[in-house]
Image 1 (tube, rainbow, N blue to C red):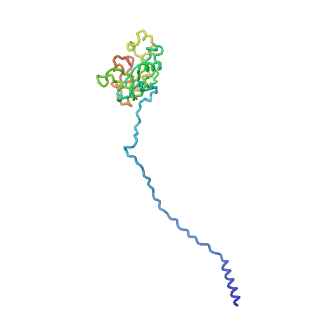
Image 2: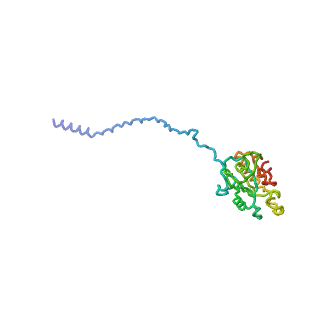
Image 3: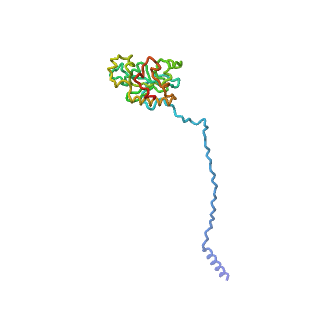
Length: 246
């Protein structure tokens, strides 16, 4: 009887050990929402007084001109001490040294260099504009003279004027100091006076210079060399001021 009870107990134990073991219950925790805080990036502001200026740098050579400086520039000009107040118009040629090629620019340039003459701008017969001296320097074009009895301009107009040379020549009277009447009459009439291209280029150039330098574009501030230095005759009788300042 005792053996029977033991065998029955052993069978029950084995049946229990072969039963399917339940899978463990996995508890998934709800995700925790972490509040996102907006990060403030500090903005560096520049005090108004340290903001770089937006003013355009001054222009000392007109955009209408080709740079053809008389170098070294210090040998043909001075530092400018005063702001420009005038534009002075001249004529120039190499008729004394090169009668057959009076308007060949290298000949004219050689004369400038030989006689210590300089000018800010020179305009060829076809209207091409060259800059020989930038406007922030004093060119040597006016010489001695006076303007309306004002002492500060006496023999000092170079300091206050921007000079422009037109490649050309005036009337026989204007050229009397340079050649005889017969020599003048022998020159082709097409070489006398100034071309339409020169007048057009001159007007644009003077407008540009006056605008940038705050110079009134009138006959009190745009003047001829002969008006300042009465011994001179340029731009002369053949120059038509009405085409420059109506």
